[in-house]
Amino acid sequence: MKFVDEASIKVHAGKGGNGCLSFRREKYIPRGGPDGGDGGDGGSVILVGVEGLNTLIDFRYTRNFKAEIGQQGSSAECTGRGGEDLLLQVPVGTTIIDEETGDVLGDITELDQRLKVAQGGYHGLGNTRYKSSTNRAPRQTSPGKEGEIRELKLELKVLADVGLLGLPNAGKSTFIRSVSAARPKVADYPFTTLIPNLGVVGMSGDKSFVVADIPGLIEGASEGAGLGIRFLKHLTRTRLLLHLVDMMPYDGSTAGENAEVIEQELAKFSPTMAAGDRWLVLNKVDLLQDDEVDERCDEVVKHLNWQGPVFRMSGLASQGTKDLCAAIMDYIDDHRQRENADPELAVAAEVLRAEMQAEARNRIEELAEVRKNARKQEQVEAEENEDDDDDDYDVEVVYSE
Image (cartoon, rainbow, N blue to C red; front, side, top):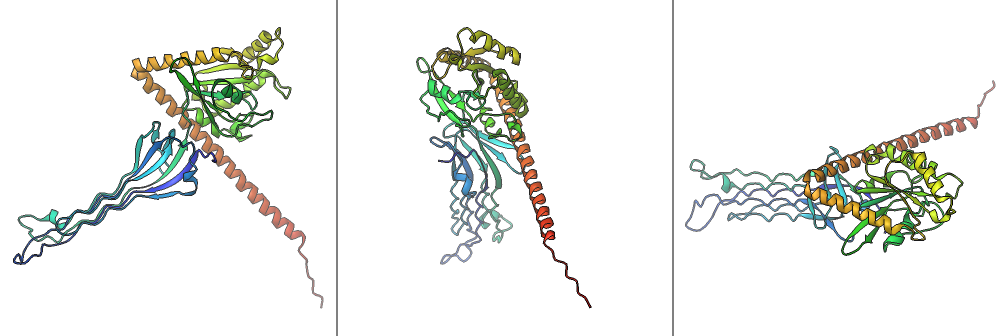
């Protein structure tokens, strides 16, 4: 199934049913009075988080969704049937944005979580509602209200505790294969990872955490080079980032320079994310000579002026992976316990995630606008060149007398 993490849709809530204008008519009761019933409420549009979905491809080709309208009221004070709510199934991890206002309407972060995105129209009133001591035969009713119409943008961001950063072939997919049951594609050429992959790392007892691997970044990714930066948004929900560095680059570059590229691209994408918790993981140390390991690793740390935790490992040889996973589990447990003890910390973490998502959204939109303008400029230049070429073949006809 094709991986689609963005989609724009239009939702229409159902219109409320009109009220009924009716009077009671029975034998021997010439003036039975008003008996028009109310209409039914229109159906609302509700998004529901479901298990088993990991893409928004269902919304790529079908973009308009309408809930059922409410039925009109009838005589004998019968209320019209209400319209059925329209339930749209979305993957867990979906953010819903109102495209007109730019407001974030909500996040679907749990199974069976529901979010109403368009309210159904309120029902109209029948003439029974308008009877009074001074108006015993009202001929007044009210129509049902129109349901809400909204244009929405759906953004899917994978739910993970840990995110992996690095250049192509840094060993991110190999690491996930080594510590979990996930089997992402691994090969000896760049960009083998084209979509985000998730792996569940099981620890002792019932403890576990989820790792997210995204396609690798290259220099200039923030300007659209390679696969660009659009997959970085999938790391905005993570608690911790691991920056994997290939200690034996195949292209002859240095590990320190490559690590600096990723740090710069991350800072351009989201300063808030760049300021968050991040560990440096020096990978493929098994390829180094034993007497060179310390020196080469220290060079990378000094080049970056790194102040955070540093780990050495080999994903392929499973060297140092257990210690790294144990440290990650301790980190996650500690943060969960602190947030449970102090709810304000949990609120602050949500605020930071919202800031990261806003920065990510703005950066991706800016890049999309730059690409759009570039395409327009190329089209204008191509048309101008075509006009110039046509002039080359013009033939001037001179009539002589």
